Amino acid sequence: MSSFLSIDFQDDQLVLIDQTKLPLVEEYIKTDELERISVAIERLEVRGAPAIGITAAYAIALALKGVSCNVDEVFNSAYKRLASTRPTAVNLFWALDEMRSVFEANKNKPDIYGILLEAAKQIHQDDIEMCNAMGKNGLGIFEKKSNVLTHCNTGRLATGGEGTAFSVIKTGYENGLVKFVYSDETRPLLQGSRLTAFELAKNGIPFAMNTDSTAAVLMKEDKVDLVITGADRIAVNGDSANKIGTYNLAVLCKHHNIPFYITAPTTTIDLKIETGNKIKIEERGREEINQIKNVQVTRPEYDVYSPAFDVTPNELISGIITEKALHRPPYNFK
Ligand code: MRU
View 1 (cartoon, rainbow, N blue to C red):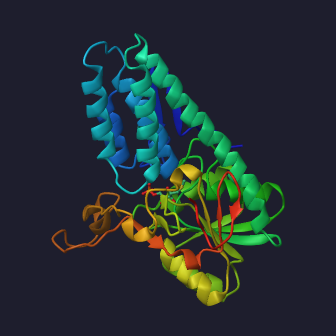
View 2: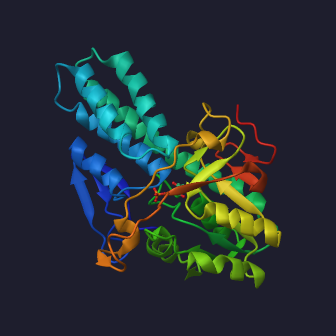
View 3: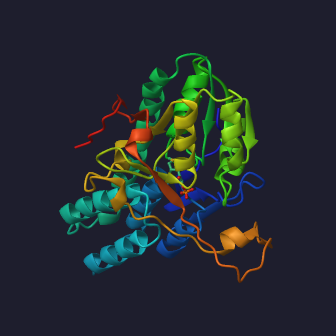
C-alpha cells in the first residue's frame, strides 16, 4: 500500500507533498495562501495534470475564505492567477471552470467558502474514482504477463488517487499481468527516476530506471512488451500532449511493433480542440537544463530550447484508456 498523501486538506489548509524534494526528503507544504499555491504549481512542487486541477480547485475555495465583500473581484483575480501558472494541462482550466460555475450559482450565499470547498472536495473524490476505473479498464491491454515501459510520473503524486498510467500498471501487477516496469528517468526534471521510482518502490513493483535514450535498446532487446503513459491534454481526434519524450517513445514503438497506450481521465480531453496542433506547449527556463539540482553542469549563457511537453499523433496510439472505456482508433471524443 502507498503510505503517503500527495494532496490533502487539513485545518482549513491545503497540504501538498513537496515533489521537488522527493524521493530523498518527504516534506509537506501546508498553506491557505493563493500565491503560495500558485508558486507551488509553477515550481512543480505539485505537478501532474489531474493533481494541478485538484490543487487549483482547493486554491479557489481558499481564496474566498473569510471574504464577504467584493467576492467577484476576489474570485476573478484568483482564477486569473491560477490560470497563468501552467498552460498545457487542460485539467487546470477544466477545474477552474467547474469552480466558476459553482461560484456563479452561489456567490450571494453567506457561506460561499464552504460551498466552494465542498466542490473542490468533490473534484478530488471524483478523480480518485476515475483513477480506479482507469486501472480496471486498462486490464484489457495486457495479452500476457508483461514488461512495461513508462515515462514521467502518472501515479498518486500526479493525481488525486492511484494514478492514470500508473493505476493501469499497479492494477495489472496486482492481477498478475505486469512482470516488470522500466521507468524512463524523464529529463530534465527526473519525474521518472525520482517520483515513479518512489511510487513503484512503495508499491513493491519490480522495476529498473533507465535514461530516456535507453528506450530504443530496451525495445530492440525485446525487453518491453508495451508502453503506457499519461497525458496532459488530448484533442478530439486523440492527438495527445504529454511529457517531452513521449512522442519519441511512440515513434520507437511503431518501429519495433510494440503497442503504445495513453491513459487519462476524460477531464484531460479538450473538446474545444479538434487536433493536437492547437495545444499550447509550455516552455521551461534554461536553468532546468544547464543545472541539475542547482549544480551548474554547463555554461549558464548557452541558449536552451526546453518544451515541457510534446504531442503524439493519434495514428501512433494503440489505445486511449479513460475511466469510461478502452478506446481504440479512430478516436473521436465529441
Ligand atoms: O510537467 P509535469 O511533471 O506536470 O508533467 C506531467 C506529465 O506529463 C504526466 O505524464 C501527465 O500529467 C499525466 S499524469 C496524470
